[in-house]
Length: 414
Image 1 (tube, helix red, strand yellow):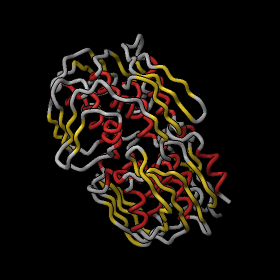
Image 2 (cartoon, one colour; image 1 turned 30 degrees about the horizontal axis):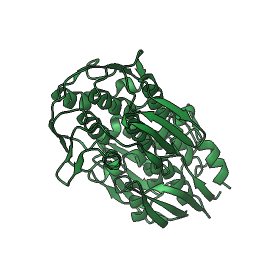
Image 3 (cartoon, one colour; image 1 turned 120 degrees about the vertical axis):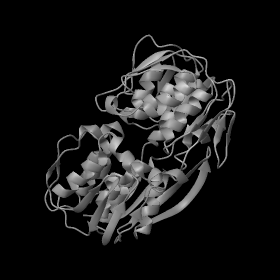
Image 4 (tube, one colour; image 1 turned 60 degrees about the vertical axis):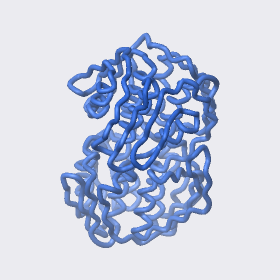
């Protein structure tokens, strides 16, 4: 079985959320092409629509009529999207809009204290269910703060930056390791008063943001699954077009190249401040590596598929410093390790990661996805190299990020 062909993927999910939110604050008409097709981004559109933003959605282009944010008449349902809830909380607070945000069962169990505490320090009147959703935000006078984040979280950082757009004095953020920086790049692109240095990010009140005209590059977290499929399958040669190559999102590809994976960046360019390129992937023999806490922020979303690839690498692969995985859509450390054991992998669960010895011939089994889209996609790729079939209890959750996943797999697997 080989993976062969050329594909382009829907736009990066992280950038899609941010583009929609920033366009909603920009006065005028923004045009966004290649928006993510996942349900998470649809949740952001739904919430913004309830806040008075008008959208005209076509197959490949979305027009946003910004500058018209208002208080919603109903509760904002963020679905399964932690990005929607955390970023929108900061945006609404910064724009002086009152709202209540809810989520599904999974999102309602995910930690919100990390945004609640800095927002309260800024003077935001925000209430919660014991630091969990639902969140209720009241109109407040915002004070500037310098937030020293104990974790590298782009969602926390973005929440504070969006809130800081409404504060009278500069708001500053310092994080221990640089997290994905799409918010800073995009805010600078639309003319926000933002300054980025190695020490901190500073943002000041900004009321005249210019509209966006942006084609969103292919999502590298989605691309990771197809990269894995090509590397693990014999006789493969796959091209992926227009992939986001932002340094804060390149941890997966760098790790796989260190393992011996054949990933070639054929060409690259800069568009709207983001690095983009075309890549080619070929079948490869992998060797073990170690991933430590400094590398985790740039590979966090790809660790489920990375773990599956590690089962085919020669030697002992160690991932540590990844405790953040335990509070994703599922406890991904537990889920990864339990499912890998069921298909015959040699894996040891750690408090903050895992150890995998390989290579191991994997066996088919019935597995739980725990309603986690990245777990479901990861073990769907594992199914390509197992003896016997992998049966997943819920494949529908894949639609959270990439509804066309199965169609793309059928297109390139020969």
